[in-house]
Image 1 (tube, one colour):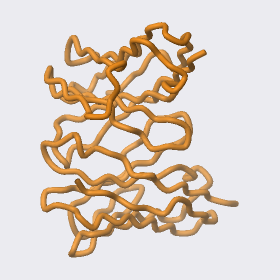
Image 2: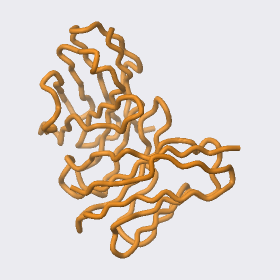
Image 3: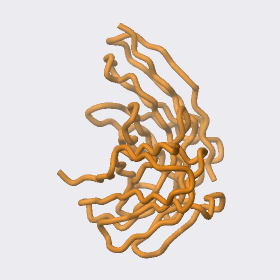
Image 4: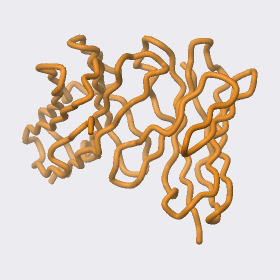
Length: 111
Length: 114
């Protein structure tokens, strides 16, 4: 079971790029890395998912080094509305028991 | 839009009085999950259904039960709520249990126990 470790909190200013790193040292071959965003009183929302190298979509990029023991969520030019908790999940095919959230990172974007 | 809908958004129940939370989905996903999230904590998986196959987490109290009468609906029953069961309850779906199948969450039901 891949355990994830993230910073508890991060602060940034509007317009900056924010990088949040997640460590998952015992990631398995079949594991995927997925990031979610959660605002207060809402359910988590899927941001991005990857297996290796780099993935980019309209809201974020995900960088995964060759050893896959960590991953970095990159949010370009954050705004106040990006203030939220960000969760990194690592899980593999066929096992919902591995859908366990880590502690998450509280990102606060300051004006 | 396809989505996961939880009703009600807020639920108040009395200590020991059974309560049922509901979840419906228009995504036609095979898998439905129930998570419990307490204040300032990460969501904690209670159980999930793969189609009609029920899977309970080892540390989920017996006080929590679930029903899935069809693909679209899933219910969380708390038989005798205690003060410690006050939390946000989140329903989620995925097309399969594969690692490349993201979760789609509803906005949760916040349960208060008085």
